[in-house]
Image (spheres, one colour):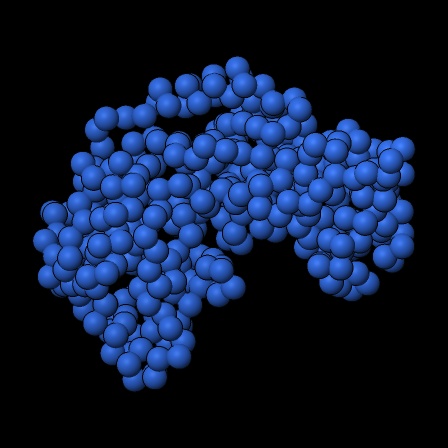
Length: 388
């Protein structure tokens, strides 16, 4: 079957590598998505194991459309009784980039009407299935691109895959689990040295780092997926997929640390680490970035500092300058990766960027910067020629 896996902008290449490792073929990188070919095992594995996927969708049909009545007619050409009966429920999500069909909510209502009218016309008593937005049997998606190509999809995930099931306590502006996993992958960390998040907030980055390092499947704590409610759900295959993936979980790994100066963030991180059953693998401390004990290099620090654009520029400059000073003075020999949308702040760090990636944290366009933290200069002395 053909699969479309959604992700955040900037993580497409990482997701493509994950799918390749799972055995997907004919992989194509798109905007905020990757498409590929695979079988039912891949569908189950992708839902259970992918760290940077948001949803795994299966195409139903595609067609060009520019008008609401034509859209309604094309939706009605699908035999919806293949999926629905009077005992099943459904929900619809829509996204459109068309200049003709511009309102996603209207598309949802139009598609709902087309499905329900077809089902009612087929029933002698004119009964129809029900809508259930929270826990539907089937979740359908509509995507219309700028070229007016409309594709209807089945959602095999149902709830978005960033909901891992371990995060119970959430602070202000937490980073998505999928974004955290993508940042770790982009950093190139291979779980072969110390990992530190010195501003860990709810603990998402250290938890995702530990799940990667110990090869714990991304959805290890999740109990339900959309495909489990489908008529062709293969419970035996699903159990085999889970058992095979779980057998790869490791018992030993690198030192992983998180800290935060805010006491509520510290408490939230502790609760979430406990929820992920990683208390013996992650150390969480209540300390300022410059006060925590830093293990000897090599190591990596990845963090998501505050980047409130509403802060006065003088405060932004001072805050980020303090971050740069703390990194230079206390994390010598480490690689540092920082995500922020505040360009003024990032320029104030006083560090030279060796690499940067554009990522979208929610609606915010961010820069994910890499810094090599070392004393003095890395310039090699010029070789002197000697006459002989």
